[in-house]
Amino acid sequence: MEGGWSMIISRDELLSPGEPTGRFVVNISQEERERRRQRALAQHAKVHPDDPSRRLFGGPQPGSGPKRQKRATEVAAERIARQGNLMADAVIGAMRDTSPSIRLQGVRLGMEIEHREAELRLKEDRSLDEMSNAELVQMIVDAAIQARRSGALPIDDGNTVEGTATLMEDAS
Image (cartoon, rainbow, N blue to C red; front, top):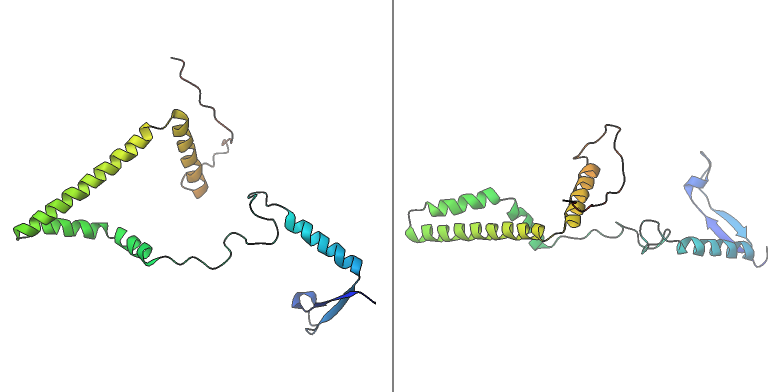
């Protein structure tokens, strides 16, 4: 076949069971090569239905590539966050110490921690107060959907209906 192209195939899955592994040469014409190239280009140009920024075939895929290494500060923060009881015991222990200066430092730290926590609660309450009814309803719906998908909210009574809800203004 003059002017044709050769493809070398050496995949074990193409062989029949018991057939020795080998190399096969498949001669294809210029036209067939161009047809296959155009088909590959067309497949690569297709957009993924769930994510328009992604191609359906080829290119980087979600989860591909090396896994991200956590920074040392992230690892330390996670470990420290799990030691809440130990930290609270240390602050309370400092408040009960025999040295007046250490007791005073423990009391100051305890008051500072309690003050920060109260500020955080107030900030969270204010953010909820500032939300519109539609935003609050959407937040509740999103939480219910997430709980349902994670299995935390089992609803298998056969009467579950999916749909949309519209917030109606109070007539009173």
